Image 1 (tube, rainbow, N blue to C red):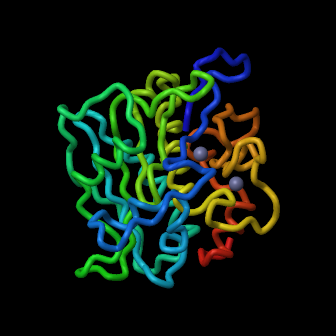
Image 2: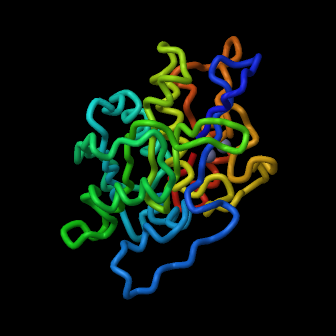
Length: 265
Ligand SMILES: [Zn+2]
Ligand SMILES: [Zn+2]
C-alpha cells in the first residue's frame, strides 16, 4: 500500500495504494530448478494463491512474523487477520501466527524495495511451505520493517509491499507518520490483510473474478471502498463499521476465494 503525500480534503489518512512486488503487469521467470532459491521467492504475488486458499495441497497455514526491534505487530491486527482468514480459507488443520526472528538494527534503512525485503526474508525466514516435518503446511512470511516501501510516481509513501508469492512487508513507522494515533491499529490491520489478500490472488490476480469487481484503473484492487482490497483507505461513513471491524473482504472477494477452494461464504 502507498499513502499519498498530497493533501486530500476528504480523508485524514490520504489514499493508500499497494505495491505489488515483482510487478503486476509482467510475470517474473520461474528460476531454473538448479537454483537454490526457494521457488516461492521467484514467483509473483498471487501465483501460489491455491496453496493458501484451498486444502488440496496444504491443510494448515502458518504465518511467520519477523519484526525489527521495537516494531512488534499489534496483537489485535494479527488476531483480526487470523479471524478473516479462518472464515475464508479451507485450512482444517488451523491457521497459526508464529513470531520468529527479531531483525537487527544493522538492517535499518529509510526505504526498502521488493528486492531488499526479499534479501531480509531469505536471511531470516525460518519456515517454508511443505517442509519435511510438516508437508501439508503452507507458510506466509510477514516482515515488520522500519522506514517505508518507497515513493510512488505521485509522491505517495508505501505502507506495505507484496514482495513475492509468499512474502509481504508492513511498515509501521510509515503507518504511524500517516495516521492519527487513534486509527493506527486499524490502518496497520488494513495494510496487513490487504497485502495478504494479494497473496491469496485478489483481485483477479490468481483468484479469477466470479463477477466483475476489479478496479480497472487500479489493477488487482477492488472497486468497492468497503473492501479491504480497495486501493486506498477511506474513512468510514456515518453509520458504517469502523476500526478493525471495518477491515473485511467484500462479498465479491469472498466468492472469488470460495471458487478457488476456500470456505463457502
Ligand atoms: Zn494492493
Ligand atoms: Zn473485494
